[in-house]
Amino acid sequence: MSVRAPLAHDGLTPILHAKLIIADGKAGYVGSANFTKSGLDHGLEAGVLARGEIANAFAGWSKAIVSTCEHW
Image 1 (cartoon, rainbow, N blue to C red):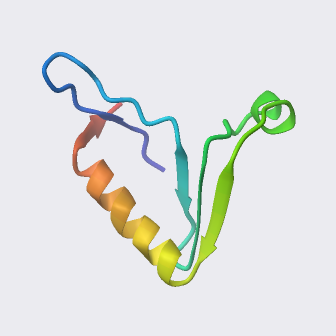
Image 2 (tube, helix red, strand yellow):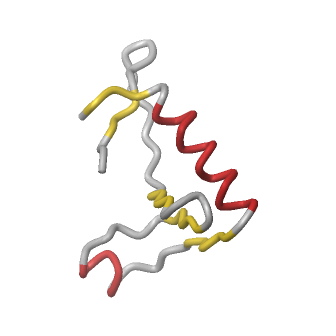
Image 3 (cartoon, rainbow, N blue to C red):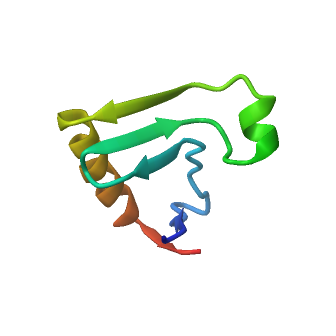
């Protein structure tokens, strides 16, 4: 697992609060919930579990995001 942070542009660091999990290119999740007890039990969050072609698109999207980040 790799944690990455966006690179700053013009002195500002972009913030993406969404969480993206790609299991294997066949299933993926993107949503706003923090993966903590509080985040999962008490927040009103949104998320999408995708399979197949959409999960594969998530995998491509995540690679594009990672390519613009630095190790955190």
